[in-house]
Length: 140
Ligand code: ATP
Image 1 (cartoon, rainbow, N blue to C red):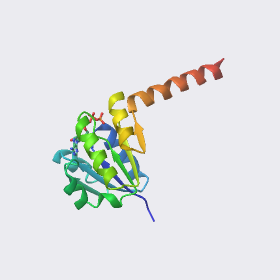
Image 2: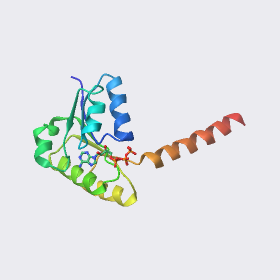
Image 3: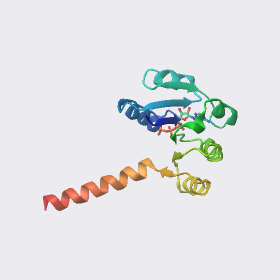
Image 4: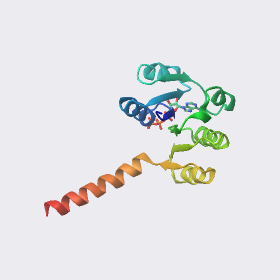
């Protein structure tokens, strides 16, 4: 059976995850509290809904606990990101990936038990540095 993904937060990061998963033919539920974002992604994903992910009832209503992998891509609102992760953990969601905004945020997410914590700007910086070094070694 196809894996079921949910992406919460449709900024640049969450939005690009949605587009990539959809182009790989995956089932994706996209969630954002901003109606314009939801309208933008509705044609791309399987289902797009307006919801506040800090509202436990709303997440329950969407059956979020049955999804295989939930990605929390809320950026600036660290409190909302933490609360959302806590709710998902309490619901025993199988796999939770969360975008961290800074080291303190990352620490709290780790304590909450997030399965995977990503720090896009830092992670891509590390990858680019590795690529530059290995390219230099090859050129040499
Ligand atoms: P990016 O760099 O990926 O664009 P960002 O740091 O700019 O991320 P934000 O704009 O802070 O990210 O948040 C990403 C999205 O998360 C926004 O579209 C915002 O509406 C949504 N969002 C924020 N809080 C909630 C919430 N409680 N429930 C659902 N969506 C939320």
